[in-house]
Image (tube, rainbow, N blue to C red; front, side, top):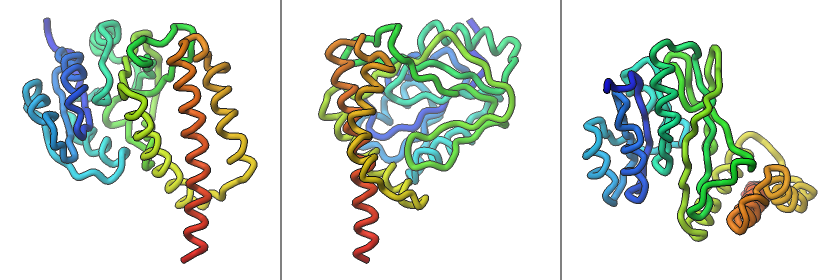
Length: 252
């Protein structure tokens, strides 16, 4: 079978637990690029066993790193994949069919969450993002964290999805929450966003309720409850650290 005539790009840093699974899932793509920012584990060795296109690039922020990786792609269309994700067989088949006669500049793809080893309930909320794009029409907006793709032109949706495994333990998830909340607070502070006591008090409980009830993670049992609480904790930390940033500025 011929290769899918598109590029895939992945950024990595110490992803030996996941990178093999991610790269196996895109073995049918014509060009795969891995941009690493200094892994000290087995990530590089594993990546090179799947693709020769493994390069180093110093990390500035997520958007800049992904824009650099996008610039290395050789094909007209590109898929962005995180190291802890995999392309489902259904999505791979859909992208193969799309490339026979491309009819959009970007594709919005659902991301299916694995919650502590179990796939999320099909009725719970599924995040959808532009993940497949025409290279000349796309770029990542300059953000420190939660980077998103801007595409000029027509955007369509896929049925097949990307499976997100994420962090395997609560400790790993908390570590990421700690890091991301610092980055998001720094981003807000740099933009001149001021903290709010009302938001500090309400954002945690409201985010929990939104995740558990509105986004229907109540259907995901224990895992859904834990994720809902952790989302509320993340929302609270972002606001608390915004207060901290402004307090430190006053003390200068």
